[in-house]
Image 1 (cartoon, one colour):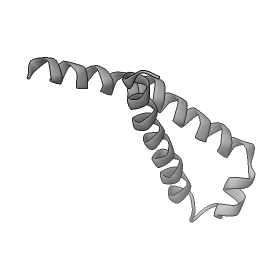
Image 2 (image 1 turned 30 degrees about the vertical axis):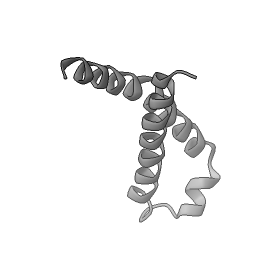
Image 3 (image 1 turned 90 degrees about the vertical axis):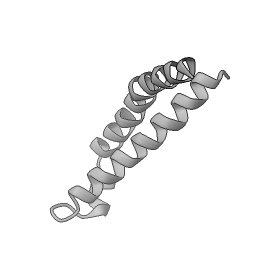
Length: 72
């Protein structure tokens, strides 16, 4: 696997998990944790956050990292 994909998976995966946890904590006063995790909507959003993190956020952060390394 190329360095780019390793970087994108690591960066985007961390962001996706963080956003999932953040959303659960944000709604925890209204909906208990066990009810949030029991719905299919939770898993759909979690997968969407991870995929967006890997393919969008990871791509743009990789490009900026490459650009910074080229300037040095």
